[in-house]
Amino acid sequence: MRQKFTFNLSNFYKKNIIYFSKNLRGILKKKKLKENKIKALDYGCGNCYLHNFLRFKSLYLFDPNLDRYELKLKKKIRKFNTFNKLKNNKVKFDLIIINSVIQYINPKNLRIVIKHLLNKTKKNGIVIISDIPDRPRWLEILSFKNLITTINLFSYFGYSKNYLKLDYYFYKKKIIKLMLRKKKCRFEFIRNLNFIKTRYSIIISK
Image (cartoon, rainbow, N blue to C red; front, side, top):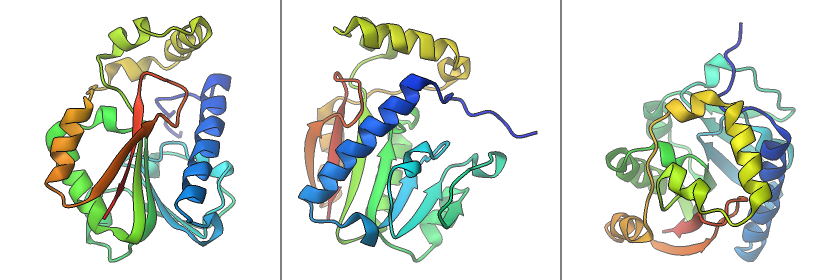
């Protein structure tokens, strides 16, 4: 029997992924990266629902639980189920997506992840980290100004109870800046590519 994902495919989840995919496509256009020519890595890909809306030339997936899930994708993919397999592979990417994942990575490991993913980025390639929280989980929910979004999230997490069992980290922009200044890379903070407006996103390039 296949294990269930921590995050269920609710209508809210699906709408958020569609919203993210549209915003991501806009970023790629600005960066003059043609979607159908991109070699992409989705780091922490989860259920891969995102890739029903994007058409990359080639797609690589990383998630420690990949082998435990049944992924229904029509496109050809390559999978990494351990970080060492990803790190030691010689492949390099035009685009690396880290969407709604950073909050489950502790700061020490995040420094290592960013270092190695930058090494995996081609010249003129980019790393996009989206949905970065800058405050604790419950404080964030209580700070939402949109009542409908708040209700949707409470409902969603009510059906995704394992979510509340995950370790959770938040990152102020100054912490991310300190991490990246030592990596000799360029970066820019942008509005969140996901629904939650209190969070932010970042584009990193060599």
